[in-house]
Figure (cartoon, rainbow, N blue to C red):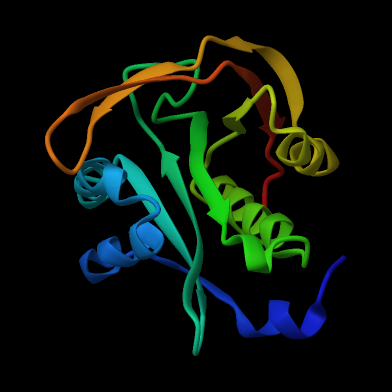
Length: 174
């Protein structure tokens, strides 16, 4: 249920380098430290966006990343498609309308940048996220194996296997 008071207090902004440690959420996501640094470098290079959900007094309570250009044109092609990923809101702030509000903000931004489609992958077992995306107008367009890898904060190679649904939405021109 939307919480208008809470929604009026949050603001969505682009990340700063100084935000990267806070994206680890007190150690829960420390294993993504190098991944976050790589995403930030893509952001600096103009290939990605790193959105932060900030709540004054509480700090960063959410995040979403956008790949505008990648080696996978079915996700992001630098022209028409952008890929939203790494989207999360801290558990204690969920179910207050923040996720939907942030997604609309990102979609509007992408439309203003000239993108026609937003794509994302959602884990097949994440039914709550699937319902959110469907309410926002995303539709399943295919399956994604969900196999990807990264180097953790200790330099160890990690492989992830998270089968997902590929979803997309046609963005409205602003």
